[in-house]
Amino acid sequence: MSLRNPSAPVADINGRVAIVTGAARGIGREYAQALAAAGACVVVADRELDGAAETVRLIGEAGGVAHPFAVDVTDEDAVTALAEFTVSECGGIDVLVNNAAIWAGLRPATMTDVTLEEWTAVMNVNVTGVWLASRAVVPHMTERGGGAIVNQSSVGAYLGGPNVTHYATSKGAVNALTRAMARDLGPSGIRVNAIAPGQIANEATLSVVSGDRLEAMTRQQCLPRAGGADDLTGPLMFLCSDDAKFMTGQVLVVDGGLVFVG
Image (cartoon, rainbow, N blue to C red; front, side, top):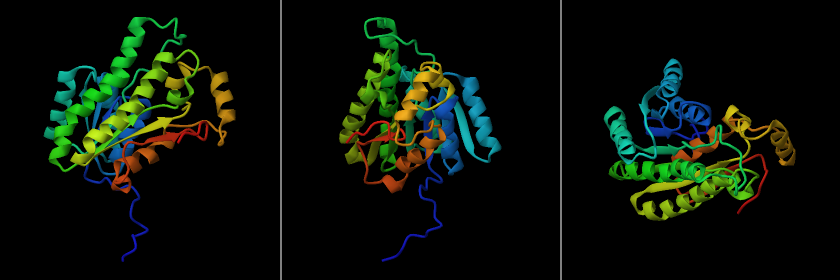
């Protein structure tokens, strides 16, 4: 029996290939930068190509390898092209982070005030986009003997939350989809998990949630401080690495102890 080298990185993904959707800014950018810093070849996918290019620039300046790709995750042909581009540029696909979602700038509305157009847009991006992007990478991951898919959920799936019925419902669907995909893809060696962040005090959250409400929710946490995107990168790296090789179908809540689920 040999002991693990204590100086070895906890989450070793050096040399792997990762796609991060919605990585033009915010949490997605943090995810892409963390993966690249750990030695992954990262494809930065987003509808906003300028923002994706800026993420790639930041990664390059830090010595990482990344490529931008403009994609609408609700477009089946576009996500297929994303997968093919990634294989062409990086040699395969090991990791998919389904971070793209409608949240920033979402119009707060009660369930009776949400329009059908708003409901459909949120479901298309937050749920259908996760399914389409995942489906597109499965054949490529299978060729490499497996991989890791990490979906972005939210504590909104558990709390509901006022005036965000469409968003909270979409994240509940992401949780169910995570478990269903884990069942289907396990035999191919593909692990599927999710991260459910709490209230992250960034520009996107403050465009939807008032500062007073964010402060009130922070006071309810076991760890009464505002969360940041950097609080999510450690859990992401764990789920993407072999340290989580026997973990699938799980939703990892990262919220400072706002809610307890199990």
